[in-house]
Image 1 (cartoon, rainbow, N blue to C red):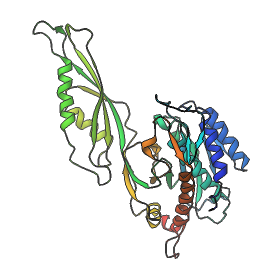
Image 2 (cartoon, rainbow, N blue to C red; image 1 turned 135 degrees about the horizontal axis):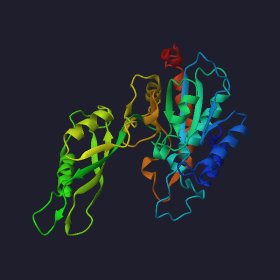
Image 3 (cartoon, one colour; image 1 turned 45 degrees about the vertical axis):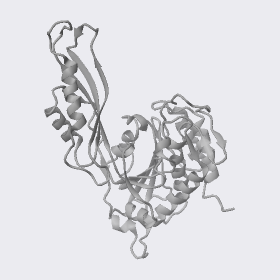
Image 4 (cartoon, rainbow, N blue to C red; image 1 turned 90 degrees about the horizontal axis):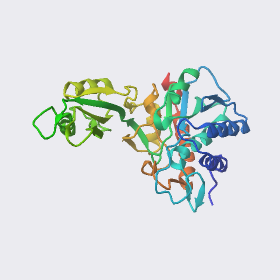
Length: 368
């Protein structure tokens, strides 16, 4: 029987304990306490801000580039349809069931195992910062964005999310827009008023058909989807106001602000973006982090889902164990074999990152 990868049993116990402590976004205090205790048990110095917890390399050197290892410990609320208790870690063969096991507990604990492994190597050519962030599921202001001003300069990073241990080298941005179409009230029995619902429908039909010109190699076209609509007070009054919501997924070829301005010029409704901060991201394929992954045989792809990657102002890849299709579903699970593979792959990725295939020039040197 092959040996388990470093720290596998320790982080498996940690993952089970994380599952059994509810940690909805903004309510991650119990899991943050657990992570602080875990790191102290390994003689690491944990730092905490709100419900974010982070640790730094024991053998820190100011002249080394700094690599971020990041995943989150908050979860969404359990959906209907769970056949097992969502806050109970249940092992069935190779499967570990529980809310947050796949998204993103598996990635978090395998990154922790990787950090612990390299934290014992004084000659590793990068400084490491591992951040277990809060509020990722809501892109909250008290999540990873609140930590960045408190830590040292970071050069590049790995974001742990379930990608089946393949590399997301691009990620769609997100912009949510509240639209208000204004008409004029009138009696439904007479030809009176201006129906705001009909005005909104004209916009919605245009949004449904319009294709932005610039398409991304990794992310395809910009995607606009109307997901909510509300109008009318009673059956016999022509509605004077219709409100609807547009979910916009940006493809890396446009800034959020640019897309918003274009939509406002081409719709009759008044538009208001809830935020412009969740921009799309893409890493240069010649970046040492990508080259290291390719050297290991990892595939590159563009991710349609949002993560803390959108809030990080330096090059990152998104990679982690588990399958994104399981996220936010009933009876969410991670496979024990995926955890083992995740630790092994992360360790090999960081090892390959440190040295070119020919062994002549360190990738650390190439980042300077």
